[in-house]
Image (cartoon, rainbow, N blue to C red; front, side):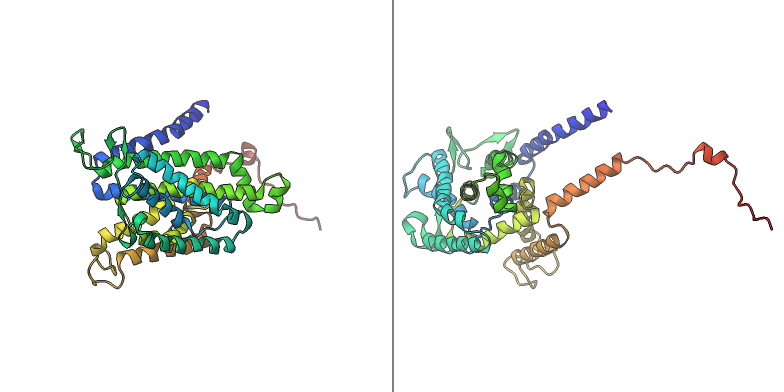
Length: 379
């Protein structure tokens, strides 16, 4: 029994290392298209984890996540570029994340006082306000055409294709280099978010979500924790915005609109509210689906290839229909999302493996005992 437990523990501990090894080896085998999907998915996962902490754990509805993504992306571009201070790119990236957190801090008094649909409407105003500022502040944002993104440089190493780099016979361009940067940032996001959820702040946020009155009775500062959750979520969004800017290499205002905020809500609902792994799964699903449908549109029925009118819907619209239908199905049959569904299936499989086999054999006393015939009454 102990040997079986030690083997199971070794397998459980070895899975993360195996997953990291596979992810680190992928740039040597995948082409730029698949690496680009992975980059966009990792950036989306960082932002979705932040929104999951806010909406899934703290129970605060936010429709303004795209605003804080824009603050992170444009903050990095302006701080590291020209016109702008022209700071070192690492410093600019850190300051862009802090700038997104500061924007969340300025809005946190509102988040500390209102909740539910009222908070959702208040954050919705941020999206329209931010989009207007991005279009009109030409000296900072570049206006409608946006701005090109300065490549990140760490210790003289550039995360761009400007310098030639070959590892094990594989040329490393911008996608291959940014892949490892995305993995590092996602790992930081994963462990910090799980630490928050498993610690005292996570328990306080869960209590706050379930009942504000009960949380206040237990000593939780309701307004303080709600404001703090908004600031932390904004910082995760700012980090996602920086990674998105580096992946796109150009930022434009129209990308950071209401549709992007709705996409992030879809990510955490599909993956599972209040779960870091669920937010990651939902981010990969929502991000990769339209890109895959665009590439394979000519092989899919009823989907028009980009630039043609061969089908009734384009690949982007078809992808939105699909994950919209996924949201409806998940709300009906798996309210805790894909992560909860997988967890239940694994628990059921584990119970079926450990359950003792049914016993059909009869006991010796039952097999040797003669059948007793009912005695007829004496007339």
